[in-house]
Length: 261
Image 1: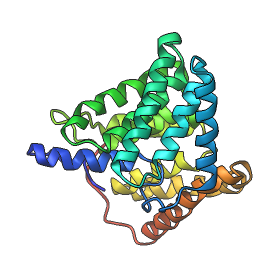
Image 2 (image 1 turned 180 degrees about the horizontal axis):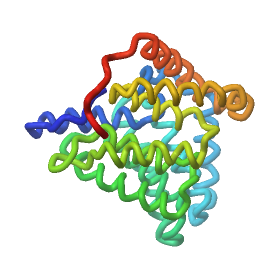
Image 3 (image 1 turned 180 degrees about the vertical axis):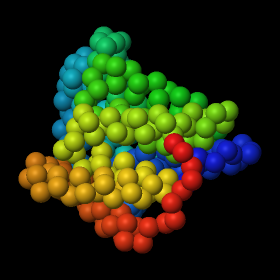
């Protein structure tokens, strides 16, 4: 998806925003979520919600509930359900931050649930993008390794796909910096490598993509042993087809790009 071109109208900007926010969500780059909620996602949500409702002033319970809200919202049946889950996660994080303003997890999952909420909006979503960036940058400053370098990962995707100034905050140099740094911080997570390789391919940097893919291949055996269990199975359902798609593109590369990032 190429969204780096300057947009010429408010309508085009809205189309970009919807596409950008959709691509930020884990799993959105390969296939739409299945109609049924995976048992592990629903169970985690129910348990996290119970803990939070039982201990509403517990900041740890709050951000864990927000994380569960985000995961559960990935399988929403419609925008009303997605917005409700996102708003619950946002409220929990904001309450936690009233008591612990430097809690990295609360800032991070606040940004993630803002992204879910923005996916349900039109004009109202425009201002949310900046809030997402702000929360992820704050989380990065407090704990750059949270969620396997999550702040770098999502800032990189946001800067990659957004139009540049003056339309929005897109910046290819920043995107490259954050996506590379995510791998430096947490090299074991396949998601970090996949995002970088997909970015190289999007930019027609085939040689860089091939090198990055070779590094990922070396890591995959260990990753399959580390990221196991019911929860991670859902991630592998996303990663495996993306790996296949990348390999297909590398087998039939596009002409080299003259653009400099």
